[in-house]
Length: 176
Length: 435
Image (cartoon, rainbow over all chains, first blue to last red):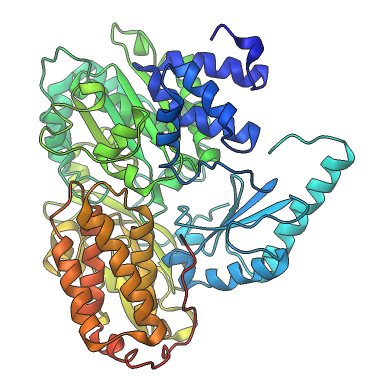
């Protein structure tokens, strides 16, 4: 894309996208990775994100929106800095995933798809995340935490809360 | 971090290098890595396909189609480029084996992809991982970069005239994309809806070119077959079911984990000896033998060899090898509800019997589990599920219907126990919040 200076993405991500669209037999194959990586940086798929991705690939924004709406990891609204995704599917359910999910709701004071007032955490009940043999499990953004107990969940939350605080103290606000 | 487990009955072929640092390319080479690809490059496609047929390897994604035969279907001459597509969209509830393969032995997947490419005459291979596996995608991407740096991938692999490129692709959350035609759609940057077959991918696949699509475990097994010989690999398993399988045992067992056991290994032994039996000394109630889409087995049905044919004969499927063990304190209606809620969430909406059927089943079971069911509902649930079977483009409709039919047929009494406003005898979680 020749309008690099106008990109809403960081120079690193813009450069990565320049390479990505050339990697496949068809430019369009870069669409889903681009949306996910853009979301990682911006936090969600804003109109501006979808417009730029559409332009880079050479398809309409409507087409991008149509594809994006299919995939459960892609979202059109911001979430917390740390998005806690609790698996409650069968293997996790059998080992107490709903108790973990309820515990998280109590601790965070939010429900499914809620965001805490300070914007640090959001909570989501998700489908199988592929860690069935180490259930119950959750993901915070892309990090897995398995073999959960309520105590372990508290430790996990505390570690991310501390991380958020130290990053705030440094004045950084980069999305994880 | 996923724990590795071990049991004396295991035959470690695919898991041989797990926990040995083989994600590093030098270590992988030290452990005999990339020798199979070199051998295949020297010997050529006919040798590869014959050896694969001799190995008896059948697709580990769930369908159990013979891999060598699948490769042989790809036309030798093609005006369009051919492709290898590795399915690492592992999403079937109860299944986490590919997770370990990507974590511990990513080069086995790359090497297997190269060999598949040599067999069919493809110059490009794609390794597609589900988006949730970001840390594994990074591991595989590094492994691919290292293989390029060594000259094992690229224009002249292993110093030959043969070209082979590997591209790692991320998904973004969709069970349906694990279905091979939806996987191709997704890789082409579209919604993951299935294509009608025929034409089969071997003839018209990715970007319209002939394509071989294999599960990540299948592909990771390939280099080992050439290291030990097809016949030797076949001899490890049972009749018409070559080799070993990564069984992921989860749920109410003492020692859950991924165990590599010979095909045909007894399910009862797997649960009681390998996985240490039912947790907390409770009684076994049911077993889902191969991921959430496979029909449930009763304790009286588990004296059973775990291979595609024997489990099929017992009225279920070996599926993805995800064995989910359920104890006697579990409500089967709730389990059925959680299972169908998943399929209702994941149905892509392309085919009406699946889109409407899964949603209707979810609503019926939700109402039923809440104590508002009627006797007629039990028959209706079964009738509805039976009418979804075989009426959709892809197997997701069947995957939702089959377990539901199994639960109703085998646990009818438990469904009846929920009738007429009676609370769930197990009184746990009534609602399923997912939307």
